[in-house]
Image (cartoon, rainbow over all chains, first blue to last red; front, side, top):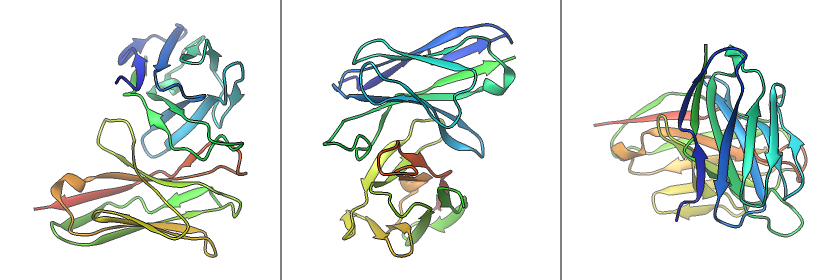
Amino acid sequence: NAGVTQTPKFQVLKTGQSMTLQCAQDMNHNSMYWYRQDPGMGLRLIYYSASEGTTDKGEVPNGYNVSRLNKREFSLRLESAAPSQTSVYFCASSEVTGANYYNSPLHFGNGTRLTVT
Amino acid sequence: RKEVEQDPGPFNVPEGATVAFNCTYSNSASQSFFWYRQDCRKEPKLLMSVYSSGNEDGRFTAQLNRASQYISLLIRDSKLSDSATYLCVVNGDSGNTPLVFGKGTRLSVIA
């Protein structure tokens, strides 16, 4: 029972490089999310996808793009990495219950530790 | 006022002690409340949901006070393994927006 799987676990980039963080869930959840976590800042929402085919900006979307490839997969892309994007990135998913998408708890992947030099 | 506020701690308590954390939230329309636990360098994991009438899971008790807009977590008979950061999680600005995380309260249980 894999749950939410993120790849890679670690990555070092140089400023200006691009990369895509991959996330897949096998729980048949409709909603998926990307958060970043920085010391003293807590978890901040970058982008989310309420359901397949939709994506929305969260609190800190600048410098990122996302793709909801299908129901299982939600990727996060850094087009031109900056040192300010050094962080731990968590993907999460949740089950939709009724009309309110956000009554359900989140299930997290193990995280990707990204360093941009 | 920030959406979800927690005392960052750290709370340093001896084994066997009872410890309580509070968390305040800004939006009276919030509908969903959770406590998560996060160990160092790990992902957050759901500890328990918080229901209107309060709920208990073993040594953990969660309460919701809608009038004062706070939730609480009580841990009885603390164990060394309870040492972690506890995150308060609430619906966003409206009931139909993603969950917002507090910055967490760090607990250290000391032998």
